[in-house]
Structures are given as C-alpha cells and as structure tokens.
Image (cartoon, rainbow, N blue to C red; front, side):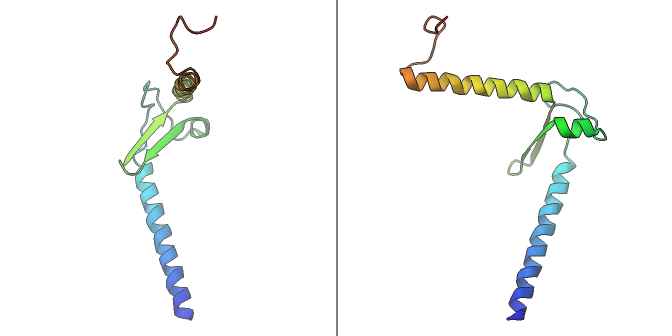
Amino acid sequence: MGSLKRKYARNRVKRAQKEIKQQLTMFGKLGNKCDTCEEPYDKKSKEHAMTWNVVVREKENVVRLYCPECWGKANKIIEEFNNDFRIQDETGSLPTEKSQPE
C-alpha cells in the first residue's frame, strides 16, 4: 500500500517540475516591447510587471506582451464588437449609421 502512495507522490513531483520547466521556457520568450505599439518594456520595473499584460498560447508556443494603453484599446474594441452582436440578435440585422438612435 505504501508503494502506491510513493509512486503517486513521485509522479506528482515530476509533473510539477515539468510544468515549471515549460513555464520558464515560455518566460524566456517574453519580449522587450509591446507587440502592438512597440513601447519598450522594462523587465526590472515592478510597475511594468504589475500593469502590462502577457498572453501565452502554449499550443502555438507564442508569448505576446501588451502595454496598458494597447490592452485597453483592444478590450474597448472587443466590447463594442460584442455590443453590436447583441443589437443584431435583438433586431435581426446589423446596426447601421441610419438605424442607430441619436
């Protein structure tokens, strides 16, 4: 019975080590500038670390870095896009300049 517990514990440790190794590899791919506007990113800055956004796509093995301004613009565009689809679902057609209320 004890050997099953040890085997389970060893496998759990191996999986954790493998995951950490993969995350460190992906961290090495982190760029030095915003992928959209190319504003420089300071890896030693705590402020940059807390405000910038990182998108990791493990399947594609891609790491993207976005400054707060570009991230905000992208979220605003996505929100507007979603709102347009909500309006389309309610009315059955896409909103146009003429059909939107003033």
